[in-house]
Image (cartoon, rainbow, N blue to C red; front, side):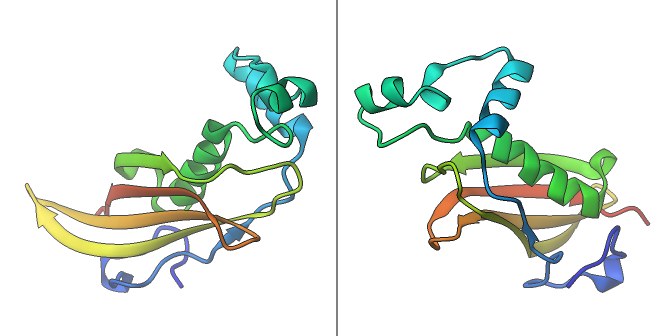
Length: 142
């Protein structure tokens, strides 16, 4: 496992920071995020609306978890060192889900005088399902 702000010499393909296991998701989390984002889509807080759209209940706002994932990796490698970050939403997350956030080193390279680390990112539900997949690249200062 990698600690905060790992040195270039500490990095190796297959390693990553300790996984982060979050608290169970709540409707309150969804509404708070929506209020902050200014997007109050009722599919994330109104059961009747969600059921009418074909869902069993309300579901998580994916960008909330994408933000948590971004915080998880920038806490380890430093926000100022981020060079690329992208995610894909794969599976719904529901109230009560417990999500685990992981990052794994997939590449180490030097480019234009900078040392770069590439990461695969993964957010899974307690069911084993994949909620989010992503990638990130950070520069590792000398």
